[in-house]
Image 1 (cartoon, rainbow, N blue to C red):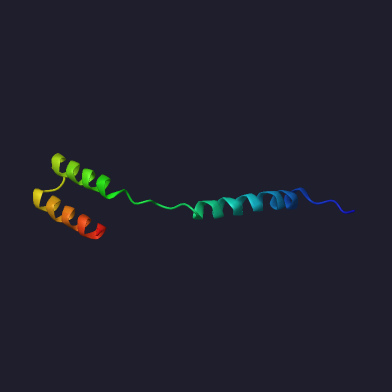
Image 2: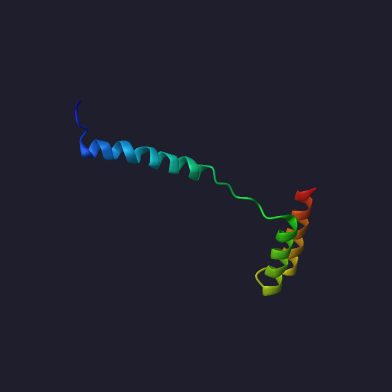
Length: 68
């Protein structure tokens, strides 16, 4: 029976681990926040002055229409 070289053995052991990590990582997904959370975030942005009252109103209307 022939002996397997250490480098080849290392490749045979680590390759499946690397591939399984890539597959597991590709299964992740981003869940969109709920409508309620988006409205809360929008209000907080207005309260902090990050957006104007008009921008808040427009964005709020767009979120509610999108949810219909």
